[in-house]
Length: 194
Image (cartoon, rainbow, N blue to C red; front, side, top):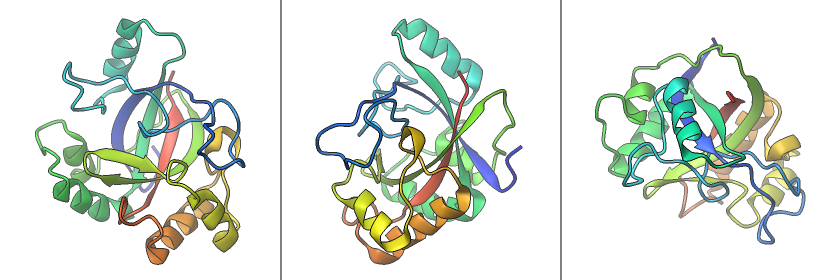
């Protein structure tokens, strides 16, 4: 288990190439993200309302059924200290708290599992109006964070260590630079399941 981390769920996502509008310090290929601002996601339901799978097995089955090359299953977790802020933003955004949903997993503090996976790093994300934004998709935030904290994305566009990621998220929250899109930034732990 990852101590102090609650499981958000699993995402089936592509890897992305850096776009012209993204910070030039990002790697040019192989970007990892939980945000559909950057990557394509496979939805849980046919209407595309939910992109969060409850188990790695469900996510792997959806990946295999999609039949698209280059899809990966990501396990996503948030520090338990960040869960109240995330739940508040999810509730404000009208997220359904049905059984098995992302808010329920976070509220129950489901533990982030120790799975046969590669821990990839941390992504600064926030929820707004039904979608997850990443610091790499909102113009200039990567450079602003680097100037203020010295933190910048590494391999795959992720922050390699928890302490730096949490410091950067706190600076974004204190600075207000993510507004009006994101009011609460959190460092999401990402692991590559498959």
